[in-house]
Image (cartoon, rainbow, N blue to C red):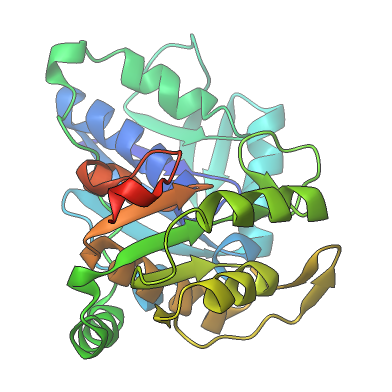
Length: 285
């Protein structure tokens, strides 16, 4: 019987978080000879989309779409037991420090990616891949992005990514607080008005402020239905918004240079394009 490892991230996790888990597990599975099965939660973190609605297949990993409630039940069983059943199959629960078995389930329960990180650390660093596996958009999303890239000549534009977090206590990125939003805008409009830009943000306020400064601004049209402090925001649980975001990410990667505030999926693949602050006039003069 082949050795198998099933793995999952929480239902609230977004694509970037899920692919961090995937990369850790794939490094482990490749080195130790396991077949890897990714339990993809059809949940709020990805706009309740199935994997294939958003992404292309990942070589070496088989994806199983799992409804949100089924994933939550599996998570609860994982938390309280040394073994679990998933769709009539039994698996031993892997947690950091436990022994390996031929049939394991690893579930990253929080932001720290505990189980997958522990498994990756079992692999000597010289066998780690040089670059992480990218979350490649589906064929349909790539076609839409390609058409937009050509129409608006994004190869000659500066891409601006501004991610605004929902949590006021999240220190990793920009918060939905007016002063934080204004400080970010001030840092960006130090660039001259004539710079041709492509904007990717979940904040209508940020988008409007940048569009009022840069005379040649491009962005994909989208809705901002969530009303909070500092204006209106996208709905992260909306399927159309999730597909639009992946289209934006593909467009962003095509830009000449990129300003990255708050992060985005696949950012490691374009690190050579990232501009560092301060964003001074002489960068573009």
